[in-house]
Picture: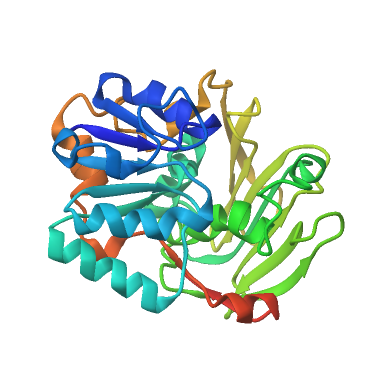
Length: 310
């Protein structure tokens, strides 16, 4: 499959390195190193799919262009949509025989996949509660840039955890209530707390966590699973706690991973890394249209602190 890469910035450069020769051309109006300034300048016969590593405000327009020409689209997270826009994009995709998909690379973190396997294997029985935290201290870097948007941390980092609530915990389609969203140092939100309407799954994210922190806690009938850290930061650890009945110190086992030098290789674990056959491309672009991983959100409601629907 041949790819057109749109957006040759920091993320786009990493994507081009992963794609290698499959990247047949690049587009970026602000980077002289790109082959084209606009996608319309590149003949549509040169590529089969487009990868969008662009700011949020141009994603929908670009998706409409590519889908209307029958090109598959892989868009970097987040993709914030209302229901009408999502339906419009789906109609365009069906009409052109194309598929669009949102990239959430944390699905491919080794310990996220291991945690998912433990859950699917029933290792801790019925799941009672899930708590997830993702934070870093980048508020000072974001201030005054395009990333200091009204939704801020919610679209930048909470979207990852909302995605995992479906991918790992089977909560696709769940509604999330916004418990807290604050802008301490940014114009937009730099700290937030969300929860599913049944309050069994909670999310907290922050640009004000001075030490990078990632933690997932899963409490179940037969024990607990705890994940700490991401491979892009250094050590990532998964702890399995097996309950002792009626009470007592649980049996504990740990799974640790060393740092992955090129964390960008986790990006859709497949375009090149697993994708030496067509299997990975079928994974990326052969899924059902309704499996796109957009987050449906009514922006005015969110700004009032209402709800998010996956």
